[in-house]
Image 1 (cartoon, rainbow over the protein chains, first blue to last red):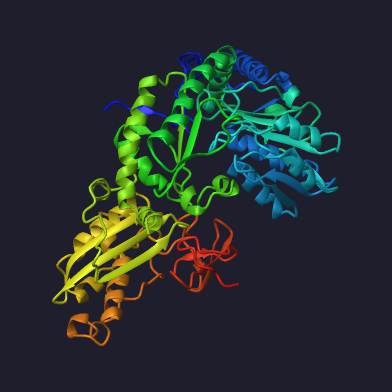
Image 2: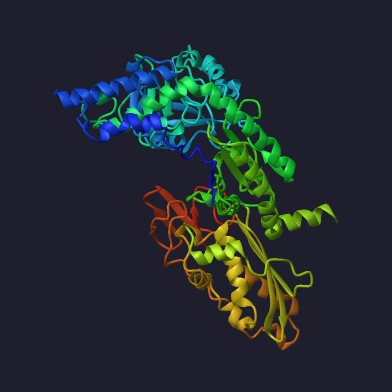
Length: 393
Length: 196
């Protein structure tokens, strides 16, 4: 069966350029980048070239890039590492309510060490308002973390405006740019952030390589104590092959970003307009105007996300959902609830995420397959029966 | 695939979906907070379940469970139908993922609710009401119980226990009997209020 893969927030295919760049480091260039002999120096050279590539993608200096194993580790290093290093100044952290769990749960861990957290609300489109961040700041605040883009609803947050209210108060500002970097232009100087997380597996790099940008002079406590790797900020032998692939993907992302965004945004808009036009009671989630170019997300009323996901999968279409049943924890998406959706509506979450190879025919397949699936599930749904009964008394 | 072939079969081609306008009994369990909600309709003739129909809002497991229960129940006496347990349904389906055992596996409960509803309506009526039958077997949460958040084993007493992995204190929900976070206002399984 023809497969239409539209779950690129979960995984992207590896770029051929990235694979080619990686292969020598899985073969004869196996040296440890910290070794002084020729084999080691060969690996180190590649590692530093990749660091330059990743730095260039976000307009940072290479020395400001710390490689990590993934976006979650980068977020943990930022939240825990920055807050703990600044502990003498205060113990209050400000986060948006829609952060990734690797930010929210890192802050929860800090609460056990005596920190307190304030969650800043979002509006119905998932947008954080800078004024609300300002209201949450106290004399004790040492760190603010607001994401650049949300992977569940696609909303791009006004991070530069939020930085404006945070900076000048001796408070560190981190942004989780994992969902945005590689798809949107990201400039750490223009955003005026102290720390920024990004991950290569979001833009055709391999899994297992990500980075935290740390502005020069920013103190951080390492999560992994060990040797002198990453200037003592992250111990452990570097995953050279994956990092080299990450660097190659960053180089390609820089040159092809605008073209990719233009392609995917046109197809994204066909989905954002097309699904609600073909099926009633379908809401677009997230902002229409401040949105990731490859992201289309919805809540379908009266049906549950996992049932939709499985039905689409059987038709050859791979998507994701933020419904309680698709998560192992069986909790509804904190993002959708924070946006003010009720539980029943949040359960109908479905997310399509595109890439540059997504074709118009793929979107046509989705638009054709979707209505009969929703029709079938609604015929089974007691909530829909109840809705129809109340509509026609 | 996280589900057995039999679950996928019942999910793709659910048996007995629908509403019985002239049902003798109606039972409903679950709510959208946990993601699963089931409504069962029964028709009773001579102490037997002549027809069973259901509607389900929920995941693949919830739909398959409802379909399986309806298939198992049709033609059975009320007493036999009351003996169908959630565990037996899961067994018939070739097993369910552990984290779906509590939340989605509520089909038998919904059927029992429908039978109780029928009995209540017929109270004081004929023998057909089946009032002499035994009550539904109480759910036993001591076996196979797990943390609703991580699936891990729980520690402590039956009423109040904890999950070491999640560092959570858990309590039994007075409504559905499943474990839920003591600190939460609502049960993660059924949405009932957790008393402070």
